[in-house]
Image (tube, rainbow, N blue to C red; front, top):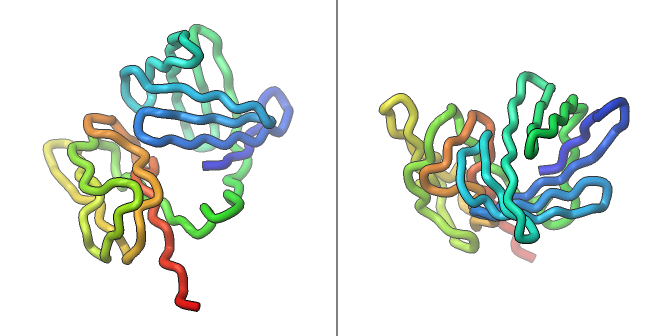
Length: 165
């Protein structure tokens, strides 16, 4: 996911990628990689370069607040930027409502057909399936069982099928 933010009056482009328990964030050409040790979507214990730190985030409309090891950062989202390269042909499938990921039915590289179940979510004692809207190949699984997710959080990325030559 690539986003543009204004932080202390400065425009900053941020790209964040998640693959299971691993997170990669690139800001102004600098990349940080971390592993999720424990927590939920909005309150995590991360490990990077042998050090652990706590990150907690809150969002309201286009405002974001992030606390990392007691330091507070705030930002205003300007726009969602397009992701360049082959990933432009991918499509993310997001949680429709806040919930808990109960089961993941696919893995990266797996082919799926329209209607195949990808992820099962539980919310308020209801269980719902996030199904493939079309045939394609799973590019990334962006969640894990037991993870709390908010509405709009991408769970799986599907690649569009390539047209026959």
